[in-house]
Image 1 (cartoon, rainbow over the protein chains, first blue to last red):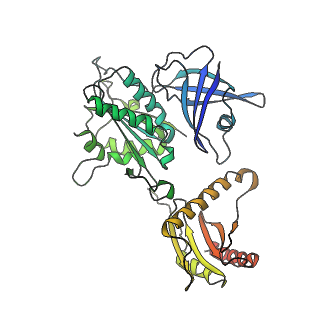
Image 2: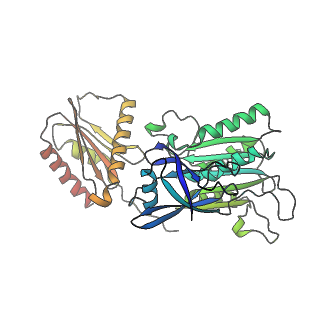
Image 3: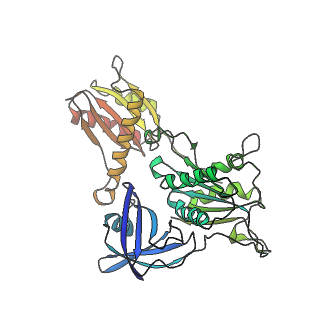
Length: 273
Length: 128
């Protein structure tokens, strides 16, 4: 394990926070979408847990994470330590790893120019915040759509950053930077969400076809979503993954884990919890 | 695929049973963890103290408090009831079968007696 320092904490809610870790010897190379193992001491042991990195690989100042404090059935050991930690506290970390990374080439070696759809549930948005910043930084020309699902509006942890990226896309034009961001709130009837005017329901409902045979996602991108023009990246609770795959499997989309003989697939996912 | 069979209590009858158990009870309602009021009953000739929007706000605060109280379940056991006394009303909340029973009473009522009656009713419904 390497050493670092917690250099920034921001509580969005009692149980949701943004944390930055500055490594003692600099941020190593990693790929957008990968995760990092963080470690904190507890009773002469080091408690380790893996978290998706929300910052981009081009950010060499710190790693950023959005983390939920696990409260029940018993408080999570690492998250309790992390939420009690202060800026300046030391933390250990292990090298970035993980396969939920952006495909740049197809199995046949050609450049992958398919539209990128990212579906993140809760803190499962983290890898796609990294995706979005990375693709922006390298001036990638592919169309990128980030969909974020949450129960409450104050869980839309990167709303401002992702909205700013969409506004930049509108200002510059899709030929320069083609980015869209939408969120869904699953408990719109609750008082906390009274100001919510966006999509209501689970995030995977963006894929559900209406009576006219079009999904909200297709309306957003302006064309039919097919396995030839789109690749999906999904991260979140198993329910989010299953819900998304329920829609996509009926359209002959195939996951990386069940790829075709020619190596092709259109869905990559990572679940937690 | 097997379907889960969930026996939902008859909330309408349950609300009436609780409301009629003591003359100082003004309002009875059941709310689920999505802030949805499953059923409610109010005593005749009693004006509501809160607007519709304020009722939503009150339900939200009540659920928030309940959720936070559950964070200590692993140490202190299950939360059984909360009592909040305002100048002009007293609010009682009691978890029941995964939902939350909300009761408001006249101020300075004999809570012990009221809560005893409510718990007795709930215990009977628990068996159903």
